[in-house]
Length: 356
Image 1 (cartoon, rainbow, N blue to C red):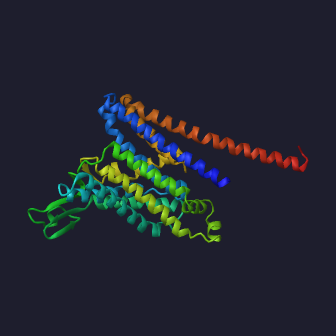
Image 2 (cartoon, rainbow, N blue to C red; image 1 turned 45 degrees about the horizontal axis):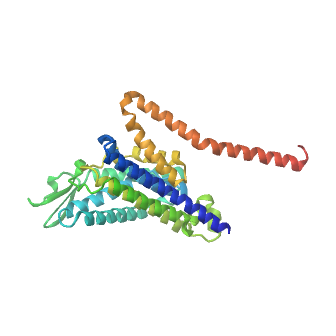
Image 3 (tube, rainbow, N blue to C red; image 1 turned 45 degrees about the vertical axis):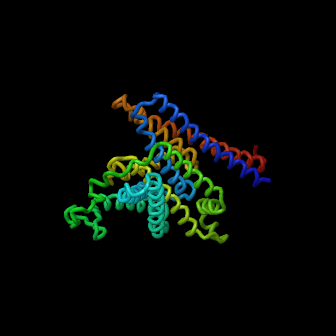
């Protein structure tokens, strides 16, 4: 009976989250079609959505697995460039929808593989050490791609870390990655509707994983690793599973990013450590472990600085005040609950001892 109630509560929470996302999408579409939304705000809708997807991915790692990762901008970078290269090579060869779908699958798979390979050494660490190593991974990936020159001709693929001339390609060869200039000419296949569909897909995957047997095993490892090991739960297996799924979802966001921008560059603005910190802020302020909270926080905190841009130098001050206010509102009830429980335990102890 208790299990049925828990499943019913979890299902209600999931569908509430889906309903919020769908309702927001419908409202935005109505505003756009009615001409009630500025072109600037329309341009923010897709970035807002893929940052919400990355926030969901990171919350799976931080909130559910209990491991602090600062490398999700790196996974996003991997998904973005792997999918963009495929779309660039196959542009005009296959229908747009089929090309984007295959590019999406490639970006997710490559990000999952990289996440798995990174997770083998990284998940042996805990706490600050894990955060430092994943942060270093994100910077390494960004800088490697930023220095890479990649081209293709009839002789095959050419790679260089010196210059475009060092590729030694045939005259009809095509440069895919032009060093710091990145990838140019990726088909613009992503739009707001596609981004919302992929956000819903990410929510379905993550929330069903949390409610599954594997998800409960992951949360038991988060709560007490030693106790989980003592009852026979394979800790390494479940940590790798959650970390790989998280990396794959971050790669999905990268696919949307790369197919919504004219020139894809591996710069700090898009994939630097500040981006990873910003995503972590979304997760923390939305509530660690709260998937719905991550989506809401990502939407509000991404749009807020842009909507306040007209206030010039005061906009970041207002943004900071909002961050502090959200943190207080989010954590104050929990602090009050803990304090109340603490004093209740003292009172019960005093009653048992006959001192009250």
